[in-house]
Image 1 (cartoon, rainbow, N blue to C red):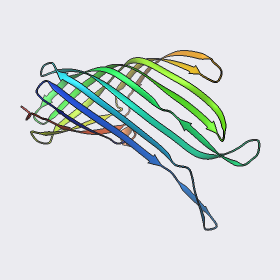
Image 2 (cartoon, helix red, strand yellow):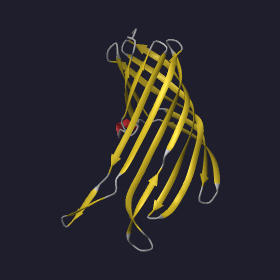
Image 3 (cartoon, one colour):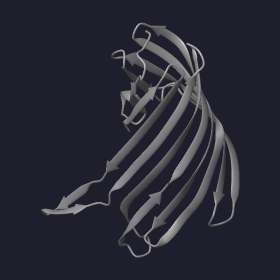
Amino acid sequence: MLAMAAAAGNAQFFVEGSIGAQYWGQSSSFDGTATSQPSSHYLSISPLIGRRMNEKLALGVSASLVRRTERYMTLDSNTGEEVLYERKTPGWNLSIFDRYTLWDKKKFSILLESSFFFGANNAIEKRGVTTLSNQIRTSIGVQAFPLILYDLSDRFSIRFSVDFLRLDLYALIVNNKETGKKTKSAHFELNGQSTILYSLGGFRIGIIYHLKKSDK
C-alpha cells in the first residue's frame, strides 16, 4: 500500500490527512476463453491534528476509517461447484499520539512517534449465501515507530515511514456473533525487518505543506 498524506499548519498547530487504496483482480484463460475473477479492494482514510509544544515535541489526536473487501471463487466441498468467497472487514481507530525529534540536521529529521489507541472492526466471511464467520474484534494498546522527514523546500517536506522497528503492545477482544463466544488475548509485536525490501505493503510516503515557512 502506498499512502499519500498532506499537512498544513502554523508554528504551533498542524493538520494532516492520509489515504491508502488498493485494487486487485485477476483473470485466467483456457482454450482461448478468458475468465475474470472477482475483484478485491482496500481503502483507508486517516485525518490527524496536532500541536507543536516545542522544537522537539508535538502532541495530537488521529482517527482512521478502513474498508477492506476480498473476493475470489472457490470450490464448494458438497457440490463440487465454484462459489463466491467474500470477506469484509470494515473498521475504525482513534489514537492520542506524540512525536519526538531524535535527530535534526539541515534537511533531514528522524522522529519517534508513539500513541495510545482504541479501535474495532467487524470481520464477516461468506461462501456463497452461507455465513462462515461474523466477528467483532476490539483492540486497545500502544504502539511506536520511527519517521523520517526531508525538507524539499521552505514550504514542502516529504515524510517516510516503514514497518521497521514498529512496536505494538495491545489487548484484543474477539466477539463471535454466530456462537456468542468471547475471547480475550494480549499481544506484543516488534517488527525487526523492513518489508520495504520485498514489497510496498509496509511503506508509506507523505507530502507535508507548511503554511508558515520552515525555520530550518
